[in-house]
Image 1 (tube, rainbow, N blue to C red):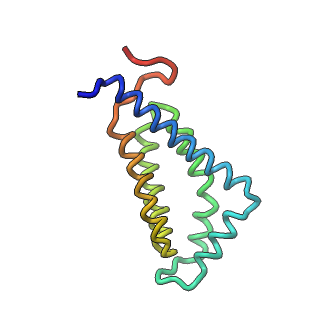
Image 2: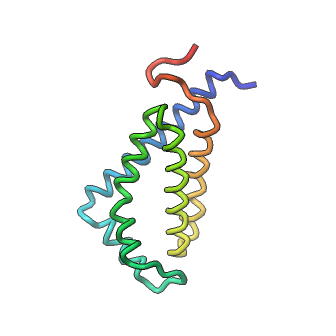
Amino acid sequence: MIAEQKLKDAERIVRITMIIILVTAGTSKLFSQGSFYDYYSQLFQGDLRINLPPFLVNFYLKLIPYIEITLGLCLVSNQYKKYALYGWFGYMLSLLFGHYILQEWSSVNQMLSYIFLGLISYILPNHYSWIRRDK
């Protein structure tokens, strides 16, 4: 049996990875001078099997950087971890759906890895403190 201490350490590593992914992605989108928004807005207006209303797509594209940064910061707190993980799952499923609409099948498959990352963090116990290990 794996010691609980090691499971808590593993959860810490997974959560730090998730935080870095989210905060880096969100800040890079915010400072992209609109290129992220322009690129994906144009893709969703193309000839697709599923067409979403442009105002809905564009509104969500504008929210994405803020969602990422907020989820990343919420994952720092043990108090908000559970809610942040539910947000992570919802957000990743929305990205999976978006890549499905764009018919980017390899991206759809890659999104599963992110969902599993959240699942690992959800299942594993966590330390009560970021700085010290529980005894």
